[in-house]
Length: 129
Image (cartoon, rainbow, N blue to C red):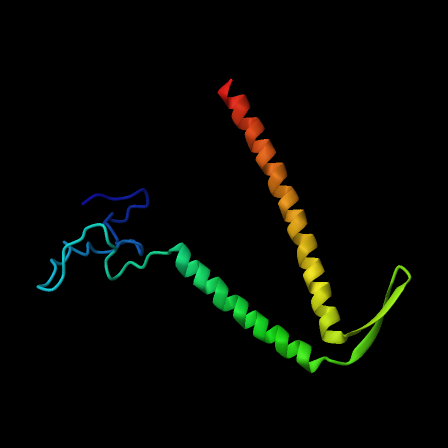
C-alpha cells in the first residue's frame, strides 16, 4: 500500500462520476430484429421533428394566452403618433407594440448574424492564403 504526500494511505476512492459498466447489450427477443443503428430504449434521440412539434405546441399555447388577453381588454383607447390619431382596442394596441418590438429585435439579430458571417468568411480566406 502506498502513501500520499500527507502520509495517509492511498486507496482508490470511487469518484462520484464513476459508474459501473452496464455490461453487454441484451440480445433481441423472438419478435425483435437486431438493429445496431437504432438507439436503445434508454437513449432518446433529439430530432428536428420533435423540436418542431414542441415549437408548434408552445406557439399555440402563447396564441391562446394572447387571444384571452385581447378579448379581456376590448376598451378602446386613443393613440397619437407623429400627428396621426386613431382609436384601437387596448389589447390589440399592446399586441401590435409587442410584434413591432419583436421585429426590431429580429432585425438587430439578423444584422449581427450578417456581420459575423462576413468576419468568418474574411478569416477563412485569410487562413487559406
